[in-house]
Amino acid sequence: MPTLILLPGLAADAIMWREQLSALAEFHPVVTDVHARHDTIEAMAAALLSEHAGDLVLCGASMGGIVAMEAARQAPARVRGLALLGTNARPETDDMRQLREDAILRFGAGQVREVIEPNVALAFYAGHPAIEQLAVTYLDFVLAAGPEQLIRQNRAIVLRPDARKHLPSLRMPVLVMCGENDLLTPPDCSREIASLVPGAQLVMVPQCGHMLTMERPQLVNTTLREWIARL
Image 1 (cartoon, rainbow, N blue to C red):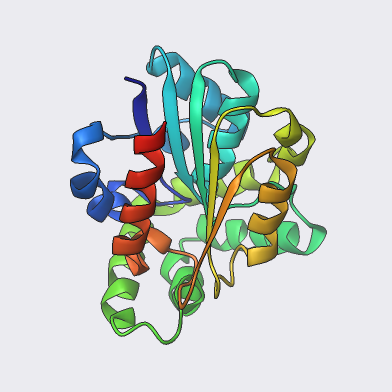
Image 2: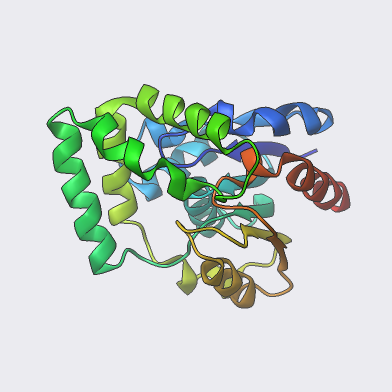
């Protein structure tokens, strides 16, 4: 059986996959932290492939999806399935590059909470009944990552490759999921990925923002279980 790898988003860790770790236990999922140990998307993907032998099923959220797409480019024969949640295949835009560079300067000055806290709400659907608790959990693990990780990972995102160039060549099953109310990676990003990958399955999640695994865990778990079982 291929190894199921869960790839967290920027400054995230296994906490964002808490609901999936139990729901997908029969598939023995492993949460990777390569995004916390390497400086570029390419190096993160290479480390993932080096540290986990054999065939893989990659499930990446946000930045984790970017790393997963790069791993599929580097070793397409080893990636037996690719699940991409709330992610983006496009390179960085000039506007976002400037925003990240400004944030990096503030992180370096120790202003992590001042940068992150006002923007937490952007990660979630505003109408979610548990948004306050979700926001606290999210803020806690982002702050726990610390300024060094936030600087390194944001720089990696700024320099990320254009994954759209290789997506049409993928031949493994690909699942693309996105919250219909995602403000950080808008649904058009996921629709574009699904349109580029032959045979990709696109699932739009209603009343959901960027953090699908935390906001709509039951729907995400059911979709992933059915998709993995078909592999």
